[in-house]
Image (cartoon, rainbow, N blue to C red; front, side, top):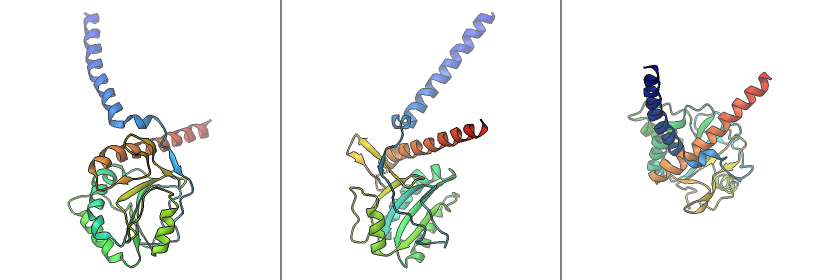
Length: 221
């Protein structure tokens, strides 16, 4: 009788655990089992830039989604919505995670409108959406420090966003199945945000969770 009960629970356990394991494997993506490649070292710091709320914004010691909106805010509204829905709402509770959008000087009022639109219909805290303001030259210099194959338009704007790690290194893919080296993610493509960017954000957050655990273990020794 006990043997039959044991077999019953064993079968039920396998039926439950195996599908869950398979799901987690594919949901996380194969890329989660390796570090996200470093494509560029020493991305410029931004702490001296003017920000929307007046606080200093740092790339150092943060995991940052960095975007360039320039003076082209009208064409970035859909990008902002896609990013908020597909990436920000999913990961914003991670302590050091932030969005930093680079905007042309004197557009503070317009950014307030963008935030109001993003806030509609959601209770998500948008405090980790950060905006910094610069001249065309400053925006160009920051963008060029990424050393990517992406170009800004004449409004110093682009629909691509980039993942910058806590050491101000640009992370991406050096073996992407579609384009080879993937420096950033197209925010007009919900499919790319859902698959590639979501997967890669998971990877880098997992890296730092693991590093934090190792540091805590070492401190206890």
